Length: 279
Image 1 (cartoon, rainbow, N blue to C red):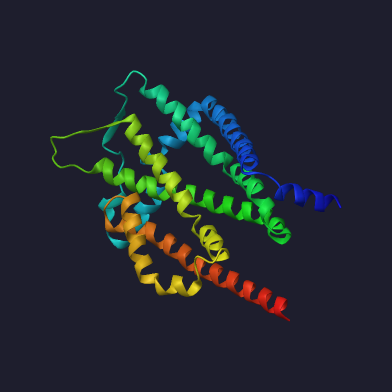
Image 2: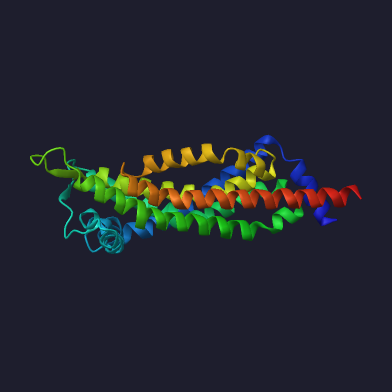
């Protein structure tokens, strides 16, 4: 009886009630980000000296691995170096403080991502079936894992490739690279956040398949076009050298193939359910 009353109450919620509900979910999400951003703000030395400026140093793990690979295939000059020939500077009065604030907010968002997903799910779940609601934990866990893997990929692969290429690129030996602090941090932030969101592709395909927008046959049909889109996307988020684009393209293509498998699994499940209902 209580469940029926609850379902009836959910159905009778007006548009303004839904907006009010959404507002509180957003407020809780923002509060979580602010709390974690405050912790990141206090951990300034670790956030900047270790994380943000880590890819600027020649002893960064990615450069060591790439140097060994480059030596193996005969391209030693590409990734083997002792120092990146550029400096980072702040040319505005509030530049460092502004960078501190926005970097802390970014860190807060990344760490709070699972909780933000949970709040969004709480808002959406009343309109779903009981079986779909029960899969919330699995959905949030998988989506969070994919996001964090994407963040790590962006930090350990996309960011150092971009910094290595752009930091060493010169149109003339007479021009020295002095990058602004905001420009450097923007590159790191964009690489990390963009990669994290790109790795949510299987989740996006799952949802689109569920609502009938995408099918596995459609994904197969447009695989070649998708490959071109992937190459364009990798060219946007990485420096314009072939090695970097290939390195970034491979995991995205793998994610696309996984998405086809997921879409096929969703369709099969829907077909089985339809057969049971018709019997």
